Length: 391
Ligand code: N5F
Image (cartoon, rainbow, N blue to C red; front, side, top):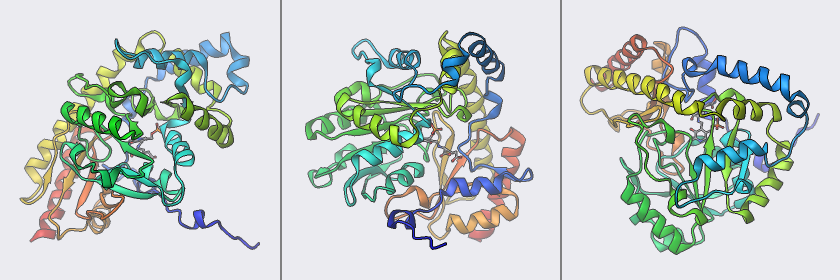
């Protein structure tokens, strides 16, 4: 066979996370690598009951092909969930996707030409960089600090010709940071004035440890935003149900791209999600997830204070699943990872999260799937390793 790959395929590379996940499947490894939600939070009984109800009451449509746009009762539920006093969302603007990862893929396909400027945070979710990269954009990194993207840095030069800006305002992957209200408002003002489309990716928004939420960019400038949501981090990722909310002109194109990609997200899993959430289940369930994650976050922060040497810094997340660590510039975290894996601890090196100019001395730690004693042990191992590196 003569295999001639497209130029696009030749440029493809594997997600650093997915590669590391292969290693971390080994039971002896303490993994701070995956952005996997904690399986302890999966509502197995609820999903079993929903599945039975569906198979008893509506087996045929659940097992049949369905519309590309998604299962209408679920679209209605999503629209109602994201409507606020001032913002009423039309279910027609909702598109159910196969995880929000698919929304990223579809957006790349319909918005990016080779060389198109796409604005991203520094750093940003590597799965989005991977999805957009297939369409060969020119990424422009918007300067960001520990509070997130800096709207004032969106100069006319940077905005010029940008197809969209990809933004993660809540408990960002990979840094765990949350964009303060004043920056959200300023960003909304600048984007509206410039006519800039903003892609707001929000899988972690519900996981605020105190439960207190900030207004979404979508609510501040609905005409300018595509909002991406997901059931992965509040219900279960294995059902692969996410969604986007987009203005109609863009929505139509995304539907066409999805027709080509997978016809529709499985009828069965959409109905399981809907049956599980329709009676307010998440309002009781999400606080349990928040409590577990905030406890584990505290355990990791305390262990880091105890074991990490001087010169290593990190943030204190107010929600979500990640802590972002900055090491002295002499340490390359991908080399550190090899040594850590030899000692049965894994994390994700920071470099792949940068679209340009990777900061190799950074790493992402996820604390949510690891029980407290193993968090303490894993952090102690990393701390000892770092002390050796820096001595
Ligand atoms: O909705 P879903 O499950 O497709 O989630 C995709 C996604 C979209 N946007 C952001 C910001 C995300 O963090 C994710 C999921 N991220 C996980 C991570 O670790 O970064 C995915 C890890 C799971 C894996 O690659 O197996």
